[in-house]
Length: 539
Figure 1 (tube, rainbow, N blue to C red):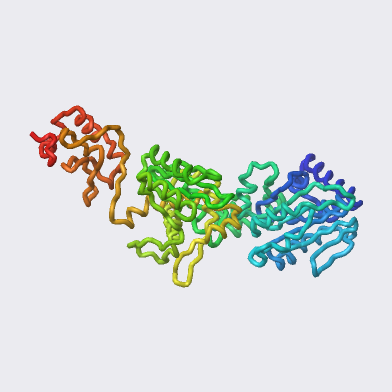
Figure 2: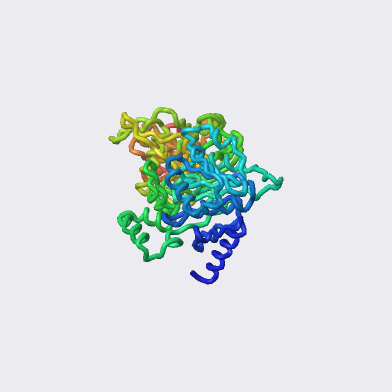
């Protein structure tokens, strides 16, 4: 330990001695990283990371410190399961708390009363057993702590923040704070603390080697335990939050991480997830040539604004409306109607609808269309068919998608509301990506008809046949069952939809040259023109 670290630890112990005349160093000597976290006075702090990094000891020591610093304070430490709290957090607390500062311990209520009038309550916070969180709603506290915060719902954290309202007996208001500890797991902690730039929600990384020597038996045992699983080793020894994965996570974290690379694919598609509630965002995700080209998120949008932005993207990127998937549930139906009224036959997607029929012999069948879209997204990511996923919020949302296998061998992706409770927000970005992937990869596979949409590249007023003007190359293209594209009914071939994007074929040099010569009334446009059934250029 260097001189600076020793001074930091010494300063914390001196502070503890001043708080009630108790020398905490007899029971707890913080390591340098723990001392750094104790010194930090951000309103909300996550001290999280590796196994064995002393997280719970930090949390309990912080509670003792705050309890003795302000006479008559009200504190609470929560964990999801009460039984786990009793055999872990409470034991850790009692192992480092000087017994002389405890006036009374109510074992039935799990409440400790200190000699200076402060009290600390240990509480479970399982939203499945207490959906309304009535145990927390009635609290008035000056400090809270969350042990293994990844296990509790974000709504618990949000509610605890509203309970910071206790006024000390002498009428003063203490500095309200919250402290959380956790191992790296997928969920709401990542966007709230790990990826956050909010100065009031700070993350301090805790590593195993902050608490144990690199050559200690504990570190060697961890390396040996995870020697066959490098991802878990980086997660639990080096606090790598990007590799968090749960047992029922739909899309493997490795597949998401590998999707950061740029691909040389093909096709363009747009997915739009329309906001339905106040805190949700409307999200546009664009896939171009297999890469996530664009991720846009907008709060509080109207159906007209969403439709207008969709049209702009369709025009800018020359996207066929058949490759535009829009969430048509609730408010999204208004966006779909608006676009169709303007001639854009976009694909409306309703997650609760029946899945589309497929010819593939899958072991598991999708429960509904939403499950099918996410299952296809999973396959695309595992196969490496989507690239350039660099948006951190999108990565986190993809990791939050969970599934279950039902008795009839169907795959069911959990609903948005359940994900929202664990992630802290709706997975709007992930949904939009699933829509874009589905319409780009699956619509052509599941539908027998092919609809082509081509924006008119040259403004032109078209008149009656009697004026002897051929206008077919501006208004249509035809396709054969084999995919051959023809610029008109006469048969001038301009490519194949299985080899190239249809809109690019429509604006190919050949097609532009044909239109130019027709405008110049050049009768030698193409040999086929002399056989035109409309006798426009017939010799």
